[in-house]
Each structure stands twice: as C-alpha cells, then as structure tokens.
Image 1: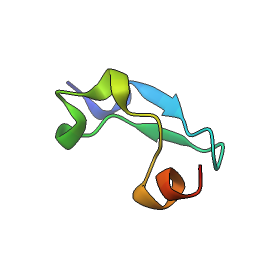
Image 2: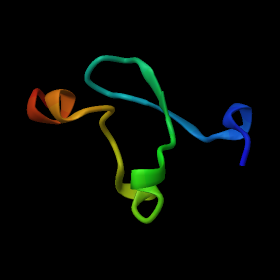
Image 3: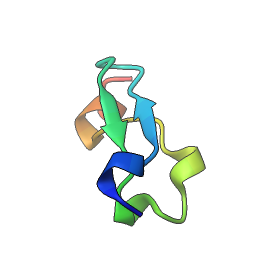
Length: 42
C-alpha cells in the first residue's frame, strides 16, 4: 500500500488527522486516538 493511499482518522481529542500505521494493522477499527497522550486526556 502506498503512503498516499493509507486510511486516515481524526483524533477526537486534538482534532488532528492521523494515518494508519503498521502496528495498528490488526486493530485499526478500534483505534480512536492518535497517541497515548490523547488517550489519557479523553
């Protein structure tokens, strides 16, 4: 998959877009936050 074709989500805490990462391959539907910091500030 090319970088320009990666799925994008918007973080509900910081309202910034973030793209799919290899480490999220198996649980991408459950990923809501762009980072651990944002997940802690929810």
